[in-house]
Length: 81
Image (tube, rainbow, N blue to C red; front, side, top):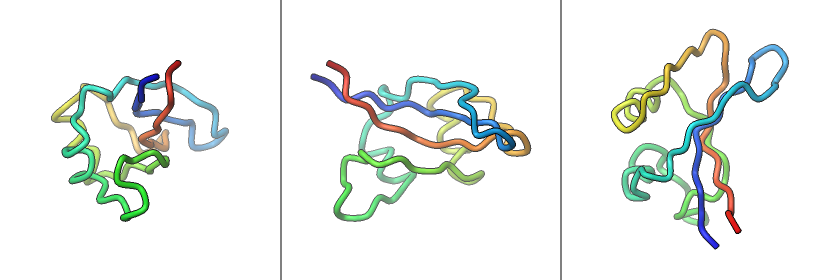
């Protein structure tokens, strides 16, 4: 069993999933710096909404074309297997 993290984005008007991009290649230490999770969630198992400032840091690791006028973005974690 493995953990998979993805950046997902949803339409602001309908809340429907528009897209997702794998973020598993981003080291957990980097993700902790970006999202500053609370002590009970050191491995970022919860979903974290991505704001504009965080999007700039994520863009250094993956080519997401953030459009905050149209979409809501978050980092999600799933178990594979």
